[in-house]
Length: 605
Image (cartoon, rainbow, N blue to C red; front, top):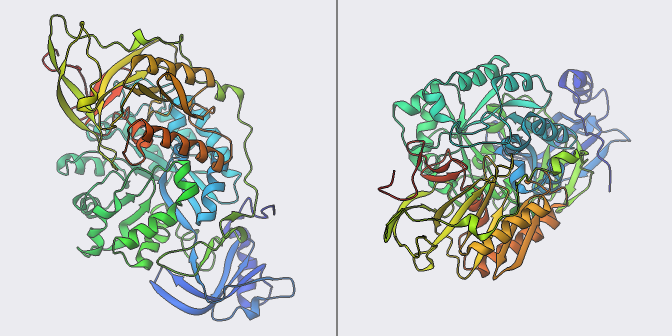
C-alpha cells in the first residue's frame, strides 16, 4: 500500500509562494490532471477541456491547459474526458454510529469520494467524557483526509431525564475551542434549554461564537412558532431534524442551513428537497448529510455519493446536488477558501467520475495524493493506541436474570392501558401509542398478537444495577428472542428489546462479558454478535469485517420476524430523549413532547 505524502496539510500561507509560482509557470506542479471536464460549483458550470495543477497538496491552477505548470518530474493523470468534481463533504455525522474508529471509518468512506467530514463525537462523550472526545479528535487528525471535530454540546442531551457516564460542561466546551481540529459546537440537542434561556447552554454557544466557530443545531420539534424563533435567536446555525418540506423552508427562511440527511435508517431528503425542486428556494442554504450510517451501508451502498445520487433521483439538478455536498457545506463552516471547490488555493480534494448522475467514484485525490481508485484505498489510515480503560466501559453490578425484566401490573388490575413506544420506519421520531393489555398472575407480558415487545434499559456506567422496563411496538418479532445493544443514543446505557425475559437476560449478560456491542438471542441461543469493545460503541477492526457481522445481525433480526428497514439503527435510538414522542431512559419512560417522566400505565400517574 502506498503511504500518503500529505497526512498533514500545510496552511495556505505556507504554500502561497509555491502556488503563485506554479500558477504563473515559474515552478512545476507536483501533479497535473489533464483533459477533464471541470464542474465548477461556484458558477454551476460544466466546462470541458480543462486541466488542474496541484502543488503541496493544494490547487494552484485550473484552466484549459496546464502545460506551463508541467515539469519533467510532474505526475500527470489523464482524466480522459471524465468529470472533475470536488471531494464530497458530510456536514453532520457521528463516526461512532458506523461502529468504527475514525481511522477505519475514513478508510471505509474514502473510496466513495468523501474527503471531508464534520463529526460530532457526542456518543463517546457520554461514555468517556472530554477524554473520549480528545481521543476521537486526535485519531481524526492522523488521517489523510479531512476530519473536523465538533465539540459535543449536550452530555447529557436532556439534563434531569437521563444519567450519562460523564457530563460535558461549558468549561469543557471553552477548553476544546482551542484544540486544532475543533470546528465548532456539536448539535445543540437541548432545544428546550436554549428556548428557556438555560445559562449553561447559552454559555456553550457563547464560547463557540467567541471563538469564531459554528454552532450546530438540533431542533426536534414540530413547533415552528415562537419557540423555533427563540431557538434560532439562541445561536444554532443549522438543523438536520427536519422531516418535511415545511421544516426545510422554515429553517432557510430564518437564516439557518437546512441539513437534510440520508443515513442508514433516516430518509429525509425526498420530503424536503421539494423546497428547492418545486418551490424554487435558493439552494445555497441546503446541505446534504448522512447523520448516521452503519458499517454495512458504508461498505455496500456508499456514503455521501449515495446521498448525492438520491438527491438527483428525487429531481435535483446534478450540479445543484453537488453544491449541496461541497461548497454549501464548506461555506457554512467558514471554510469556503479552504474546501468545497476546484479552485486555486483550496485543498486538492478531487474526484474523477464518468457520469454526474450515477456518480461512479473512479479516482479520489485528497490533499494532492491519490487516496483511492476504483473502490480500493491507496494509502494508510493510522490508528490511535486507545487506552485499556476505554475498552472496559460495560460496568454492570451483576449478571441479570429473567426476574430483572418482570413488569408488575398495578395492584388489583385485571387489564391495563399501557403507554407503548411506536416505531416509525425510516425516521428518527417515535409515536406515543396506547394499548389495552392483559394482566396474568399480576404481571404484564409482551403481546405478539399486537406486535408489542418488551424494552429494557440496563444501567451500564456506574454499576447501579438499575433496570427500567417498558414496551415497544413495530419490530414484528416472533418467538422467544432478545436483541441487546450498548449503543443506546445518547446516554449509551444498554437497550434490550425482546419477547422473552430469559432471552433478554442472556443477551444483556453476553454484552457484559464481551465488553459491549450488539447481540441477538433466539430460543436461548446466540444468533449474531457484533463486538464493540471501545466504549461499547466502536470496533477497531476493518469496516468490511464489522459490516459482515452487522449483516449477520440483520439477517438474525429478519429471522426473528423484523422487517423494518435498518431496524438496528432505530433500536439504538430508543433512549434518545430529545426526539419525540416517547423514549426510555434510566429515569423511566420519557414523554418528549412535555419533557417529563411518565408512568408506564395510564391512570396510575
